[in-house]
Image (tube, rainbow, N blue to C red; front, side, top):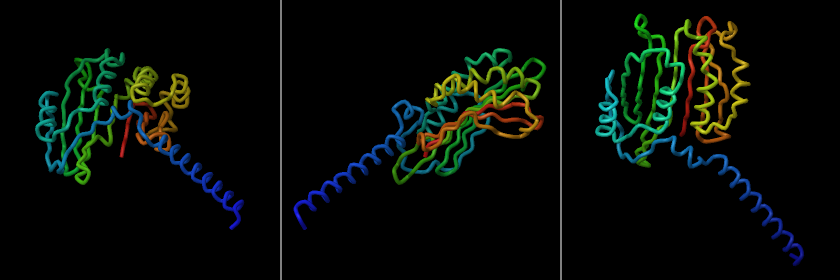
Length: 244
């Protein structure tokens, strides 16, 4: 092998390594969570499954958090706090009386599901609107890690309240997108909603995504969705974040 040929091969090898390293770094940038996103996921240490338990219709947050802490060694996530704050500050709910809030905790081996359900209504109709915050925890006994893998907040209303409900969707969608670092500006929210009117008979019983975020954008999948009922009216709004 001539000296010149050796030099050329070494240069080509160096170029290939540079390209491979560059691609790897680019891939890592796409698949790593930002420090802000990491705070949306609750994570702790656990060496064994949760077992099988079913706590239904708990009437107080204190009782629910005590069970979570004492029995399962997990805590409520920042997404839970963000969602509750959004519900408390949304003007839509100010026209209703908060009737009741209950908590369900269901454990099935390596999965733990926590629901907070709140009912809103009037003096004559106790359930016009319902909100549900749900968190799913999963334990990996090999890595001894437990963390939230699916978190959702859902608002559901009856058809008669649909116009008022739809009117607030732009505001809550913008606020939630900001809270979960879903990089969509106000104009994007407004544009998306223009495609999905308050009533559309062509979308009966259909779920539509305002702006989903796939794994190619972030390992923390985020989505804000609307649901049309059997009459083609928007009666449900949902935000979901998922991690592996």
